Image (cartoon, rainbow, N blue to C red; front, side, top):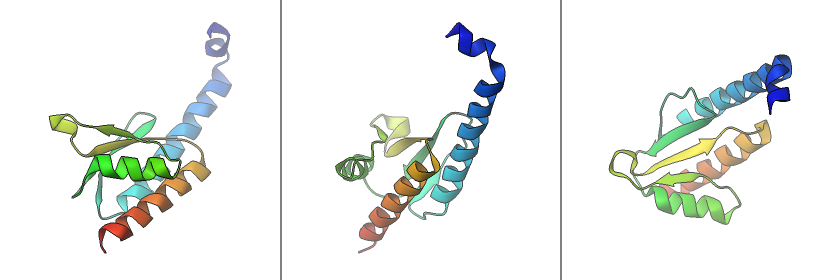
Length: 106
């Protein structure tokens, strides 16, 4: 671990990649009308369902192999946390959420 901290350049490049992908994901998720996206300075994006059940959404996503964190506390009820990953990960979760949003409108 100390060796990785001593080699700052690759570490900071990785941080930059994660930040860029987190921001890209936040922008894509913000376009989904049923999600409210909170600003983030972490390696994840926190969203709240504008209406609906976060636990149900988490379970539907898990059934497709996409795992997000669901919160069942008063202040975070119906929030899901989505970690930043690769561009392919972002595209996959965004498409799955679009499909879920379409099902919600039916």
